[in-house]
Image 1 (cartoon, helix red, strand yellow):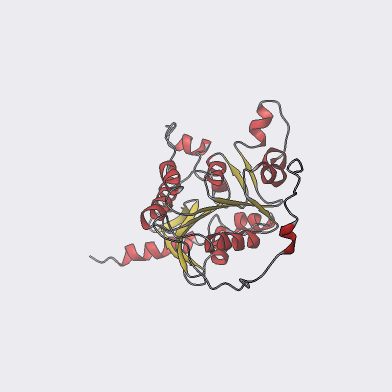
Image 2: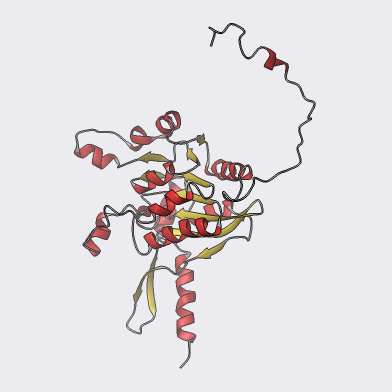
Length: 285
């Protein structure tokens, strides 16, 4: 009895997982001006530092010879990496697989990522592009039950707000739980013209008599001004840079002190405008 066939299937799953939702859906993702989840991980993490967890998680189909014939990966990619040399957890939604909606082992991967950040005391960067585990009609058809009122992994999202720095990058339409994950963070960023944050999309709004597009529901001009997100940037690459910069100011967790770097600022520097910035007249704002 040999394990060779099992190992070959694992390698096959890994190769198929790297194809994400397939050529057509990957092309559609890029056609919308968006990077794929694996490209995002590569640009965010230090080169060669990403160690993926759960790559083979998904749903497989088998041929008559019991060899794997098709594979639909889970809608999230996550693992450990370093950002500017410091350990962090990276979690990214894969919009090319069912639009990032609940499918396969998505709830388990989200839970494990959030739990890993909490237990290891590591910052977590969420790259959100889709509902990210909020459930879907398709999942209800295949598994006729609901997890409401429980929300998968939400207790870990809440726990991480007092444990380690949490960064959320809205990199596409973020609906339902995806929108909640954007808000439940210490630092959040949207990309102009690329991301929107709302509870439910235009079809739901239309059902109650309101005709509005994604930007009108929760585009950057709305959410960037009302405080739902902290910053708005022009590109995904700027979002990655802001995530790294924010974390550079933060300790890795609540048990540590923030990093100390040599200052390049002259300690004797004076800013004369400070003499006049506060009016002497107490009635003047």
